[in-house]
Image (cartoon, rainbow, N blue to C red; front, side, top):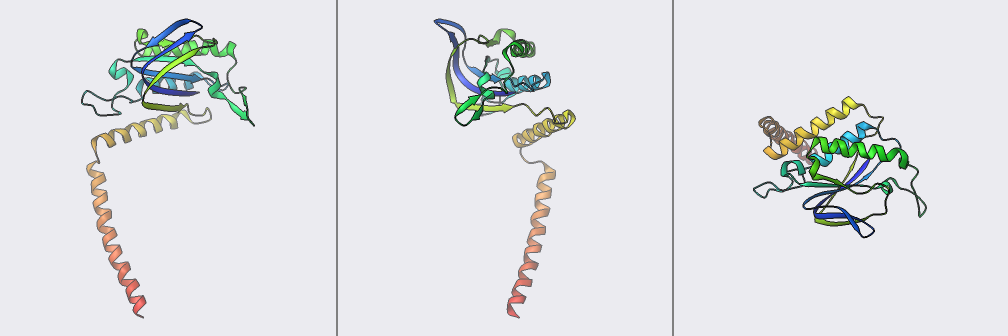
Length: 207
């Protein structure tokens, strides 16, 4: 599954002359479902949409808060063309999930998103319709998120997610004591090694 997540100041969806949904500040998500996607893919994408830190905090620090942290809105639009494969210059959409399967699958994604957040803050387009999507991108900020491949070990994926979260916390708090100690030891070691190496080189040159 692929999602294009855009930070917006406002966004809306129009079908014909009818505006069917609109949001203020938040994220507009274009969502492409592939034939191989499962509910595990959907859960992964929903977590990322709701938890990506695309917004500033109350002190103006960038990349600190998610839509859930800020109680912002989400506009989700089904976009099968994200599963395009080019054959020369012709787009091919056979990797996209067929509409009769994708529609209930997409509906379940919206339901999961609403149950994991605030239902009134999650809007969507009209599945299968010819839509005009009006987006005022804020930044611009556009993030592509692709769910892990089905062949990957779920336990390993969970471990990778936890490792990434630890890295993010470490970056926000600065280097740990152990990291600083390792750096200091490595620096002393490199200095000694460098001195010895330079002595060896100079003696070789003298001979």
